[in-house]
Image (tube, rainbow, N blue to C red):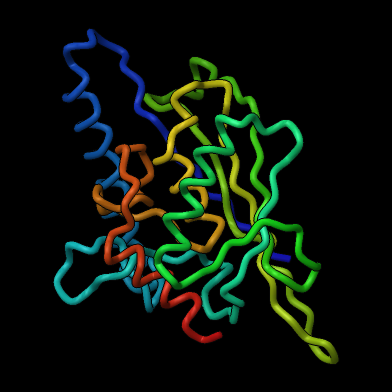
Length: 225
């Protein structure tokens, strides 16, 4: 089994509220600087994946990055999803809307149910994580999610994704559609993007509409089935 988890964060304000825009801009600049540094160290194609890219704004490249453990896998397009017992209706409402957004692409089909061990599954859950002063570092963790690839080789071979998508309900800012869309994106195999318009941008920008790059990445993951 191979598991990858992705997170989404909300910038925190350490100064006066009137400096909100400046703080958010600075955090975004820092994120992009880290990504650029990594590109220089390992090479753009090697870091992001040969058939995925970081930003839909780059000429000739138009795919959101793909989670490493999903790359090259043949996954069915149907997912069976269920909620943990302690998930509130408010959280379910956000994930239900996120499900509709991905179903409307026609690339994947998410249906309610548990599925079998050989079928794709997504578990929606919640958790409570308090960010300490030392761990905040100008951001609050709103949720996490990611794919868990199950593979069997030989007789009866199959590959399935037993994914999770979860919201950190310690903070009310996590119970929103943009966070649910982001974490569900991770569950389906999308990685973080440095395109601020993408739902997969690592700090919450309130985006709920999939960009062309997000959709193209989904097509790349599920086109081989």
